[in-house]
Amino acid sequence: MNTIIETDRLLLRPIDGVRDFPFWAEMMADADSVKYLWNNTPCDENAAWQNMVMNMGHWQVRGYGFFSVVLKETGEWVGRIGPYYPHGWPAPEIGWAVHPAHTRKGYAYEAATACLPFVFEKLGWERVTHVIVDGNTPSIALAEKLGSKLLETRFDETSGRTRLIYGQDRP
Amino acid sequence: MKPLLETERLILRRVDPDHDFEAWAEAFADPDTVRYLGVEPMNRQQAWRSMATIMGHWQIRGYGFMSVIEKTTGKWAGRIGPWNPEGWPQPEIGWTLHPDFTGKGYATEAGAACIEYAFGTLGWDEVIHVIVPQNIASINVAEKLGSHYLRTIPNIPGMFDKPCHIYGQSKP
Image (cartoon, rainbow over all chains, first blue to last red; front, side, top):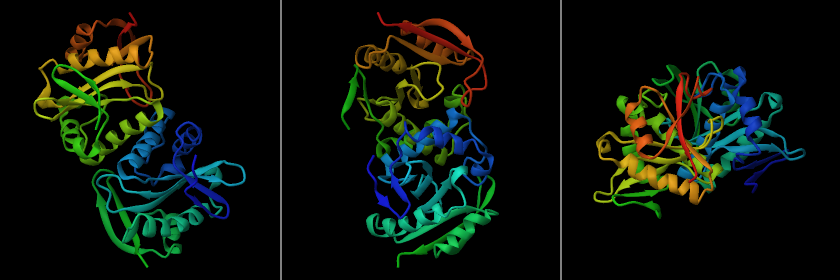
């Protein structure tokens, strides 16, 4: 499948529903991986499949969406990272979720850094955000490392959780 | 968007998010509409995600629920068609109508066209309909479509936590 963005160690491409599914399902079944996601309870394979195809549908509606991030060297699926804006989301964001076998290697930072010029130049966004559940310390650190600042705090009624909206404007 | 199927009163085509979303969100917010779907009434965020899920299903399977449009008004009347997400017992023809469009025989009219499509175009040998036992209206539709009771399953993991009847029919 076509690579859209390439970094030192990673390829970012659209979701391949057949090839990516087993790894997508592993991540969504892992309690630590999903703790701060919108679906914050671990999913079985069937629910993970629906979550994956929802994200494929997001691409069709918006023309963009989470990329599947794979290791250049081995092709292993590392996670889903990229522009995301489902209906009712506070603002267009660059989000990240990394498979538990690939955390703590700087992949989310590497991929998200490459997504910033993509959303400003290719998608024409004026502002990018990161919607982060209060308490998600690693994601707050990553947002700050990307140069984003806390813009706003909002309570989300659907999830019953407080969200920190980090972000930055087009340079 | 190009019609995929046409009946006397209805056009069936792929989901068009710009045209369909408002009516889609209305339907899935209605407690009577979702009562037998194994989900709670949806807010707009959840309805958008359910619509995107159907569109992703199309991409991966090459078929999926179609939007049903009433010819005389151009209005979105529901979603009907082939459905086979991961973990489903087997490929089905399913139906959900917007509450303004129930009681007109639309599910039967569109469902019949979809069964023909499943056998003729998709090459299925059997179609099923997963129906909650309390959903008498859908059991009536299944029987009008020529399907009969096949078996009962205890649940569908991740999607239905209650027993479901499987109605169905084989390719003629």
